[in-house]
Length: 132
Length: 390
Image 1 (cartoon, each protein chain N blue to C red):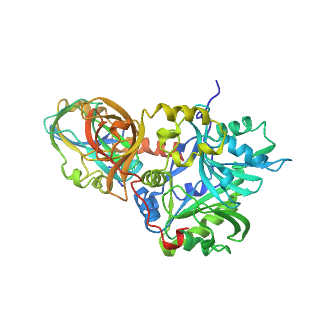
Image 2 (spheres, rainbow over the protein chains, first blue to last red):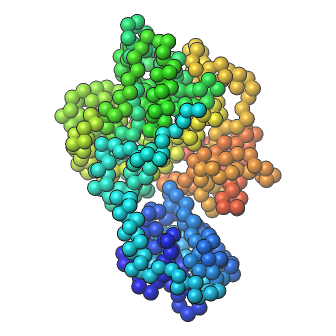
Image 3 (cartoon, rainbow over the protein chains, first blue to last red):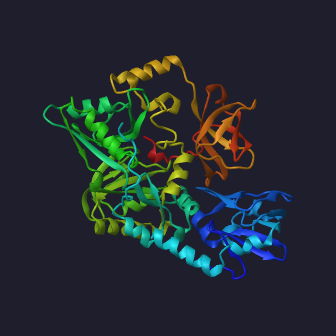
């Protein structure tokens, strides 16, 4: 699966898609693949204040719980309520319909420190090599 | 102090099928010091594997399990006396060709490991033990059989152990062997030709709560791979899937089968684990018996129960349990979504006063107390075919 050029990526395998002063956050195709079938998602409510690097919620497969870390600080505008009934959307469309939260960015410049698509792809290629 | 766990800093060990798992693009994990497949995404992954075993058949590489052979040296009965001393079930009740679930205990009545004891001959037994406890178990057996006239052999690396599990397992395996599998009842075994290999141990055992077989073939890589592929090909018509440790765990959890370091450990005794029916106090002396006798008189402080989540959330190993008054009363030992029941289930240790079916228990999941309820176990029990009832 291709990694969208306009997104930015974290080492913990979250993506962030900035549109003006708001942004959508999700987990990458690599992350959903590592996790396996997603069966449960726990997300913050609208209005919650998120701090960069802190956990914003969790995504669970049958066998594991994965904390999701906030790529950039901000306030939750909307959580993806579709995921409550269809958590598997994270597996089928991690970079699109499987988004987790939409936030209003507190400091849009924070995003600049994150990896772009090329850097992220190189990063996961290295990880795949290490585990092979 | 001697270490009870396998070294984790050394390179993980590999079964003879390791390269094959990697060719199948299995997701690999370190399990008890072994590099093992957790699931095969190319076959559909954990849930598909779980359902294949419940509905048809699945194939597991369980070569990481250990095998200890104990046989009499000069005196007939030496091996039996040793096994009786080492394990809590009554091995004297085993006919040749029969197996039993049992455990090796510390003098405190807690678990060294759970084992399946097979009686290979009048004076010959095979103990199948867990992967993560292999060295500890072998040392334990050697150290505690010095006074018995028997020989202890670690055969763990001699076998590739394959588990063929599910309601179609017998149909599948009967295509690959000359043995009449109808004559091999649950927890019995035989020797026969499998895939052209003579004298293969075929046991009607498993760790899934389903009918199935475990076969022990030579650990030669090419032979092991050939047998794997032959089983997969023969199982295609039933929808066989290769299955990893992930499905093995959800299957055994639904069937309430214990996992070492979770439901049983060196801190948990037989009564707490609810394994009374495999512990034969009346058979005479065995390691742990005296302590168990005392503990039985003293009464239970905690007991293993099944939980079903009432509120949204998945209980996981190590999560704390609370009663309705908010007091911490216990801990979850295993927890997962159940692919068969489509519910979130768990096993937990709680005081007997909180163990009645229907009791409300709160499981703390990421600082939130989520409501759960004690339910009857096993969570899943297969319907036995008339032919399987002995």
